[in-house]
Image (cartoon, rainbow, N blue to C red; front, side, top):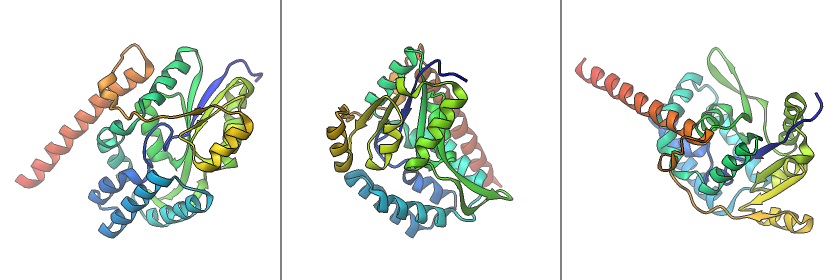
Length: 265
């Protein structure tokens, strides 16, 4: 397929949202019986360190190894339910308003918007649906008999992100030279180099140096805003957020009913 249109590729953590998407779900995973109290505290500390200093290659590799070891044996359906039931309370308040503005701008210009994240697909896909994006590239974990084995089928990290972007561009007919990419981390330089219009967002020190050396624009996102406060129903983001609000409310009611029934029983 010859390239006929462009796309906008967004990293997720510290680019669209202010925290690590995976670590943010530590509490609901604990409440769902997936995590021990010690693991929750460790996740909270890792999230804090991530938020104040970002993460370099070695830190991200250690985080990946820790997370894949941690999820071994987890029930896939419990993970999905935990994410679905708490998506709005956890992710909604930490979405950068500047990122939502950019997503809406690109969609209004007729571009597909793609989230490209090292977090697992079970976390990234619901966030993508909430934001009304067109496609998601995320890490895929191996599951057998409904439980994670601890193996990784595809790790959406570093050069693998760029490879997946090129494969999607070939499939969807994107002209990467006319496309845009946004990220905060030096580990995403291959992703940024894959397009004609790269942007460094809240860059770590290493990425800031690369951006300066290559004359890439640097953007600062600093205004997390709850999506439900800006439900512009004329936009894909607004419509998707509205659907997510309703779905979250229905899920909360259903969960409350089940809890009450258990207590009565």
